[in-house]
Image 1 (cartoon, rainbow, N blue to C red):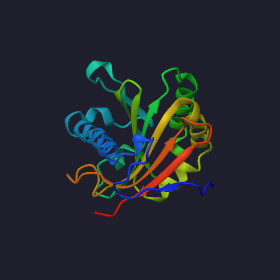
Image 2 (cartoon, rainbow, N blue to C red):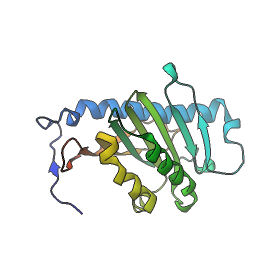
Image 3 (cartoon, rainbow, N blue to C red):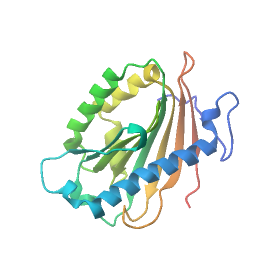
Length: 210
């Protein structure tokens, strides 16, 4: 594992890398919260979406201006649990000429292997605006994050990132008490990846537990 990362202070912005501005993480967190709120709304207002059937199950929603929004449910029975959920938020800015084909293919293969990840609850993707996408992945145990990160398919998706994205913010967050607790997502850590140059630049910002 590379150790040449930059450790960012709570309010630090790296010169020449504006995507490290904490204001961007605040915006990301709002988008990830929007995704979580939408899943909760569907559970309450349209429970038929979560009727017993083969899983994983994919729900496509209509967003303004035709933006892409997909909710993939791995364990519907766990969505309403009152336990803490552990979240990974992936927010990336794609290159204008990127080919979606390989990324979409790996994404479908990741979904197919959901049954191999016992702590994975759901995996959602929202197109915030053209070229800017946020993924929210919820787990019911922190061990699930490590299990997910060690997946061979996940490693293939990571390997595609430099050719597909300009930059990525990868957030770790906590959703205390689950989707129905009325408590918001709490940001714990953000990793920053910049693919503009031949050598990948990356940094980490740790945040105090609230």
